[in-house]
Length: 281
Image (cartoon, rainbow, N blue to C red; front, top):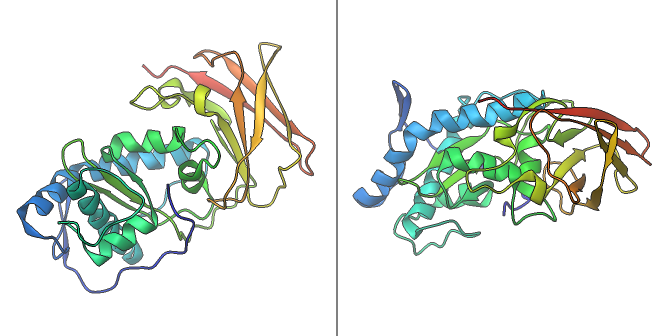
């Protein structure tokens, strides 16, 4: 689970070069060939993962962020180092132990300010958005959707191994009054579940806001003129936005080809939108 802290940026001059569709970061600390191989395997995943992250943000019309600013490169190095640590340890954990074979201070900083996963980088993006196991906070999802996201760093280590999305302490300046997942408009059913078949039907939908108090929110969902039962819960923590609710389908499952009208009342600024689930195959 990501920790809600401000980011500490890595320092120091590191040479970098771009080779085709991969990135080579020369001078990133690594201990031995095993750690370097973990990092090298993740380079080609970088571009795929960045595209997946930006695609999700375009769905909610917040927009992607440039990663290759000076700070973006620092964040990428931190995320790559964190992935090395996690990959060398055989999986993700909430801490980066200094006794690990692939430990670096830079990687430890990356791990403490990131979404981290025991799975590969591209597959983990959807898992962050479904956020199974974090139903009381949706911390991974809320950080990715927040107005303050960006720049970010992305790292992946080892075949099918651990990965890291360095994203806490962003400097984004988007101005959305609220963000929902699934968002208004067309939404691919392929993004409704992750590669492990965990679904938003199970973990729940969400709405978050920086300025709208959602503590008394009352939510109705209708489809085809029929009311769909939902359970509404307040989300905890200060991840992305400190005002957020979870909306869980109760006794039904969303389906491609259906539209769902969401109305939120009982708040100072009522929210209404429609989700159009589509099949992109």
